[in-house]
Length: 536
Image (spheres, one colour):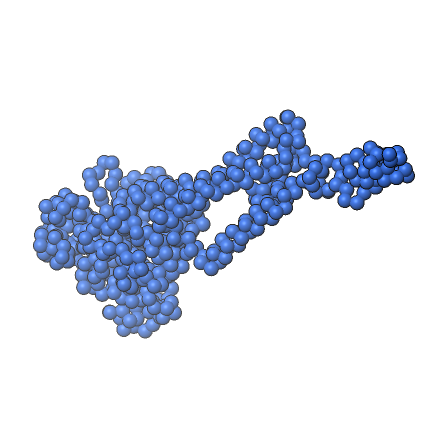
């Protein structure tokens, strides 16, 4: 029988010298006494919490759980689950570094692939998985912090607030998926799924522009008001874009250009061999071609051939092949301007707007930020103005939108822009061309944009010199691909002076200076940049 205090004594002392609960005793209750070798300390069953950790209250649990939404894994580290916490932080860091590297290497161009339909669906799936992953992260972070140690009131309150936090962290993923789906639906509503025009070649993935060096878009501003029948093409501008550089020339044609010709391939060539309604001295306007073709399907060989007829007429006039067109309802354009926060434009002189007498207001001269409605009327107002002045203002509005609709503004106001885009009337740009088109648009934003309009006194719409129009259009295209320094040498000192190197000029070269105003008529022997014309 062992003496009291021996190895098997309940007090755990090895010998009689070790009393009950003596520090360092080996056999005492609970094993090694406090302060003995390998002590785990009170309240640490299984080594679950670090020695320095204090018991968490409800506020601390909520704070660490919320922090996990920003840095996944920190709540697990705080709870003592080091392997899990470090693994989560490592995966999150790798994903962030990969995204940053992708952006630094590819820039914004790297995200143009999202314009593809399959890529959109991929984004929706990834966003949905991200939402579920962050929901699971919040729940596991909360549970790891052991909220069951709180009193009942603390458990209820923290549980409710963590539920709200779960909804909050899932919201950005839900918004991303919703925005992409909205964009996808808008694309389907505007762009045909396949080329529906016999004049458009099938889109090849490897070469979407079919080996062309230049692509030509006809941009049409339509005014299909409720009190009018059909579509009135009030504004017609050709954007001719160099695919390699993005350099663009805008050709503005007056709506009252008379008796345009049609190419031999057009059904209307046989109907009007001498020009559109050449027998009418005051008729045959360019803005009547679209509706005439739609009203006479028996001549065009089918219904809704107005776009093709107008493309043929304008392409033959400029000696260009018009590849695609886009018609936008004027009020749809106003929505787009509002969506990007307005347009900053240099207004040369006061422009009254609203009705025939300008009773709605006045756009004052100077640098102004115009709302969508003001920008619309700035390009449309006829008060104390004429069609040619309107054309000058319209090209400035188009140019300002092209320059100021930055990717950041588009992403920030995505839903508003999609809502405005749905009011586009129609286009023949096929959906498979959308991604190459976005790539090209990014080039255009940083490229040189010049503009030329065929207006008096150099071009008279009632008796147009078709050969002269073609000659000057060809020269504008040639100048657009020259370096800026080389082109500056061909710009005249004043709008009325012929330019050196132009078909009618032999005058010495002088320094370039901007035209006096984009809203008044003046001689334009060569295309000028929008910076010169519009003060962009």
